[in-house]
Length: 378
Picture (cartoon, rainbow, N blue to C red):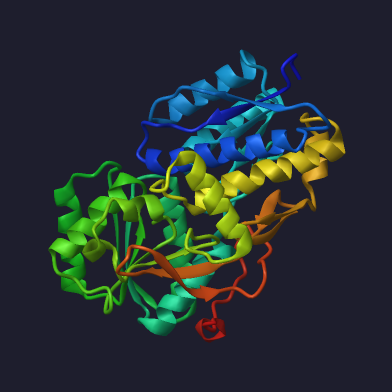
């Protein structure tokens, strides 16, 4: 703690492939910090955000984390987005006994005592999405992803889920990050030839927009062969036309279209601060509620330091825009509310499946048996 209050680091890039989503997470983090401070901070002591300036690549995140920990002496960092950037930062916080608060969906199969995971893991999104696609479209799927850890690991998990249910992965294609538009056209020509029932995309950031545009240019039909994704969100849809976006499917715990009192209040506050046209993503919602969870744990612990803060986070709950979320102390992941949504003609995510209760996180998805018939529409 400094004379001004508890300093906390923010690690979101405005230059990366996923910058549009990271900006929504940064916005929501700042909004939540202000709410915490307006409510009295941590026993009267405010949180003081310290934003790191960083570039687009994983080493940039690592260097910025080193600056935050060593120069600014922050005990915790909110941020990173892609798995490659999280993995670049983990050794920094582990060696400095700091805490990274990570608010993005990821592939699971990870535990660090110095990381709190607020984003969804495969049993909270992949299982539901695979079940829905097999039940409503068919069991032949084409995988398209970028060349880094999340797409490969997510595809490994999805392949196992599809094959458990007697499905078939007709092809698995990886493209470089920031792929040229023609590369997306070429890989979707594979879809024309192979005629899968769905295309599972693990493209991220600006590459998502290129994929959906190429899909539309080829005249493919989402009613017969949709793009299904865990990563496509409101920032991507904002960059697409209605024709390019309509009919495709995403699984996430939160969508900005969610019509509940808590969600409406969150959206109103966000838009009042950042503009009516500012997209709100599932990553932003997770970034928002994780600040409140950390603040409540810090009040109980009386500190932002480890290990007291991590101990106080175990079992912590917060009425988030998606519903009541709770930290699982044994994994340092969060119970979340799986949902599936289809993009409509107004470029809004219409929820077509919602879990009846929060789902406890299982980061190591090693013994799950997929049952497509168990997924019942509301």
